[in-house]
Image: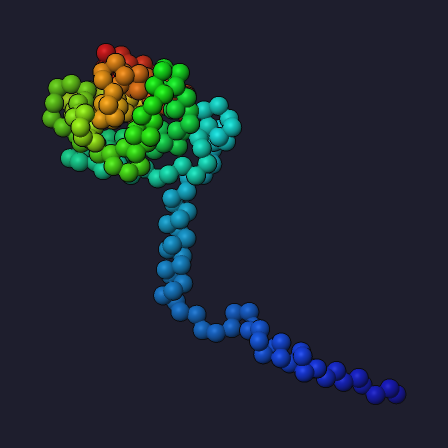
Length: 214
């Protein structure tokens, strides 16, 4: 009968074993785990699922890694309407390359950066008591949206949030255009470009008269 073979670790194997910790070794702090899960969930919420057509090389697609919307909303107390306005501006931002092409097609080849800054850095939207669609100060950074006009859009497009969002973006981008040195004619081209961009996104066909802007 053969004697059993006994394998003895070499000094090098012992040294390596001491240097490399076992998987999962060491205590785990439950509070740290909770924070980690929370951070991951927050990161997941911030990144929207990619949709068909989001390829920047596809006509109407958005650019990869679009920046987050950073617009301050003031006195917009109707939460549903405010959320739709935010969604509409996010969709303009996520389809910025298409919006820029639509601006270029209308001869608006400058001030793109200014309007982009309004959506990502320094823009304000204020829901105001006034009797037109919107107004703005050319020296400011605020798009004022008239509440009575907005109520009319809610009523006219009660069954279509997509139609309402096209109109919200149309007026807000029109007023942001004014704050970026565009006179009335130029701002009308800006709102045309905004409607075309979101009509393509939502598969709608909303024009200026549908938004009571004519």
